[in-house]
Amino acid sequence: MTSRGRRLAGEIWRYLAVGLGATVVAVFLFNWLVHGIGMADSAPLNGHPILGYVLANLVGTAISYRGTRWWAFRHRTTTHVDGGRTAFVAISVVTMAIPMACLSISRNLLGLDDPFSDNISANVIGLAFANAARFVLTRQYVFGVHEEAEVLDRV
Image (cartoon, rainbow, N blue to C red):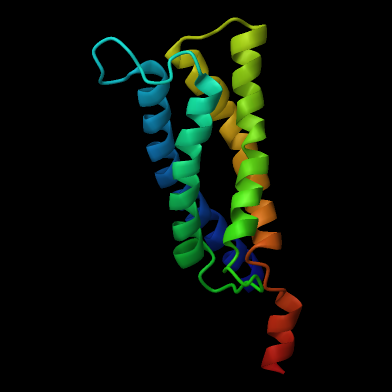
């Protein structure tokens, strides 16, 4: 494997590890908000799964930015004045539509509203597609050091 391939593989694995941590937090928070996991009878957002998903994933986005910035893409720089925070959040919000669409289809078209169905549709299927899109967009538009520039710096 070339050094470029090893670097890309390392970025992917670190990005996935950060994403896993943020996802664990978001999934727990989603289930607590929508299904009342750990609560006696009710959940704060039982009738509002999309709102619960958005709120839980905003927390996950904050965790993900920190880990992505300081570990997954630590060797990359950003030209954004705010360190890429705005672009990162914008990408996260836009790609959040993917699992939300999966959740909406599961709930509204298929009539599945149990915790298992919600988690499979949003947090497995939707999140897999969203994560792939997020990786490519974040690497390109937030922490986008061009490798040609690195080669020119060495010459």
